[in-house]
Image (cartoon, rainbow, N blue to C red; front, side, top):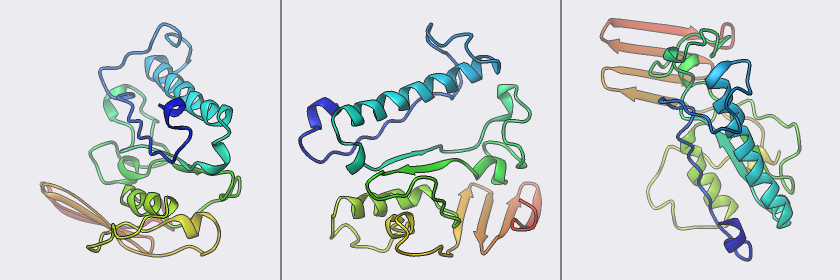
Amino acid sequence: FIDRKAGSPFFLYVAHSMPHVPLYASEDFEGKSPRGLYGDVIEEIDWSVGQILKKLEAKKLDDNTIVIFTSDNGGADYVGLPEINQPYRGWKLTMFEGGTHVPFFAKWPGRIAPGSRLESPVSHLDILPTSASVAGLSGWEVKPIDGVDLLPYLTGEKEAFERPIFWREGYYQAVLHQGWKMHVSDNPDKVWLFNLREDP
């Protein structure tokens, strides 16, 4: 794909089915990790991301291409690694930090300083406005959306920002704002309130 599109702007979305169950690693990665099959799968994902980065470099596109690496949720309790989300509480399908606090890396050597950090909580909803901004597109924001264009924050033009982030799954809801996270559940009928800045 990158070979075909190297001469013009492109958007590439790679959604690995791993590390989702059923877990399977190819022969080249089976047995490589001391973390068992789950670790093997992570090694293979790491290799795959490396292949994309190497191809961008070979085509001399790496300085002018933004790469975002993230995950849709925290680790699941059924993979047999009880410490997988430490130091956070909870798992996939919960809205505790173990279920929602995931990696979100952005690499763009031409614009983002290596090792820089954005302390503001971000969301996958931010990928659309950020990608549109990177591509120089306009007119897509016909209706207000929840996402934020992260580009000026990633490049250091603007400092950290605050905005609420919401989650909802059936009877279970959560909101994060200014370091406070509230969970509201109908089953069980319970409300939790946490100050994540004091105790993540």
